[in-house]
Image 1: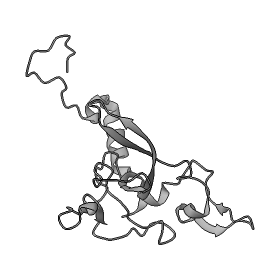
Image 2 (image 1 turned 60 degrees about the vertical axis):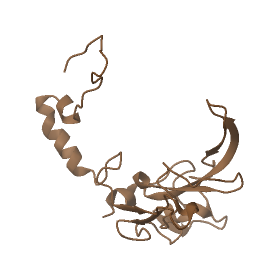
Image 3 (image 1 turned 30 degrees about the vertical axis):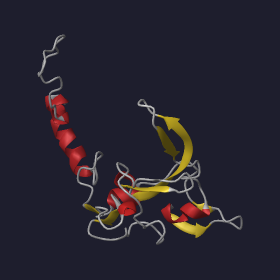
Image 4 (image 1 turned 90 degrees about the vertical axis):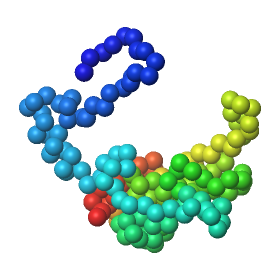
Length: 179
């Protein structure tokens, strides 16, 4: 692989380089062990089969994930709410979204659904107003709503705080070890 300073029209600018090719000879075995160790990889490699709706009958269902690994819900978290599969894969949403609705996405890499809330209206580069949605600050909070994502979802004290990681953090242990 060589670095070039000039490219001509139609020439490939980026070559495909596999990570193991970047490893030194004595590190190739370690790279293989790391790949074998990981149950799930980033970029949706080896992390399940998804089925989504095509929106033919109901346009608001377009792109919605209906099954993951042939099941309508997960079985790795600690309550039915946490195991729900809601929304799309986050690359597509239905048209005519409203400011007052939550936009749901199932993020396979973290094995959970998240939602986005309207943040502001922005004007894009061609002059069209578009809605900008963001994750709420409470999405990964240590709260009753997120208790099913805790390793031990029993009540820790009378203030209804659960035995969870601090707000802003979430465990990936069940996700990385699910089949």
